[in-house]
Length: 397
Image (cartoon, rainbow, N blue to C red; front, top):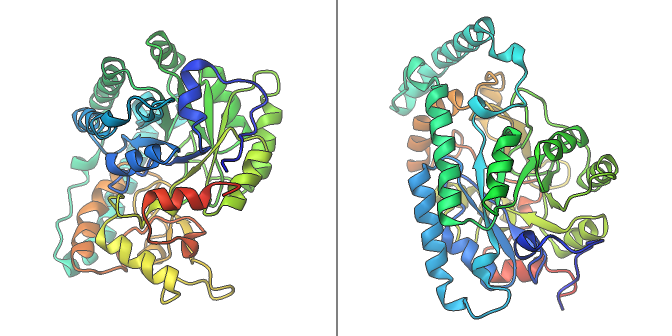
């Protein structure tokens, strides 16, 4: 039996299908490969919801992903609500359009200091690049072009309008109110990922009509609006309560995310006020996911207790690090994270510098030098079809 959500009032029609599917569990957007149209389609067909990952893809690639997802769901159009109406697309917010970045971080002096830090970090990576026989991009080549960032972001918004995406969520920053207004005018509800009550107030103030509230146990990147900010450690249920209190005068639907791997957690989060619960790590070993071979190997070892185990309790040994991308993210612990723990707060520059090293290491099966995004419950996941994983996350099943 599917457990009801904890909604206190009906959702707006445009959001109901996306955030209130028959099973109140959404498959999280996992950029860099794990999220695929096949994974989202499998979860939607089984009664859940989900978001495609637009991060680290071009607008044309995301258009193709949306077309593919809709094609996979074409035979399910007679169902009510239609699975094809129950998805959204998650977009990264580049620095050029992120209103949450302090003005002080955009001054010529601050930008010059950042460039110097990236160049110095590149020098530290040269020995490893030589050992791996991997190319190392020039520091200038990985410096983002603000004009190009704005152009690509605008192209994503155009794709959302033209393809009539059912919903959009933003991660890595907070776009201007005009962005939310533009999507609202097109009938597209838009939300943002937040990690604190303060960020929640800012998101709603800019026009977000729902929030993804991300707790500290989440695998992969933390969704702090200011990329230089250290993510909080408030547990997810407490954070939900704090966000609800902060928004008591302007309540919006809340999606709880971060470290969810079983139905008990889902039920408790729904009871704490979440409209739906988002899970990512739980789906990484499904056949429908695009998880890389190296990542799957590491996760299997974690589940078996053969590696990446915490010495105290045998659970997954994970930590939050900037070593791989220049932005805080949770990974299974590897030597690379210790060696480059002081990587500068510079995304996407650090990500671009380490990308070729990580690709070569992954091709060789070298798990010491690749990012292995995973939540704290990675040792509890299973290698099963996405529909089976969804059933295991469903309260009352």
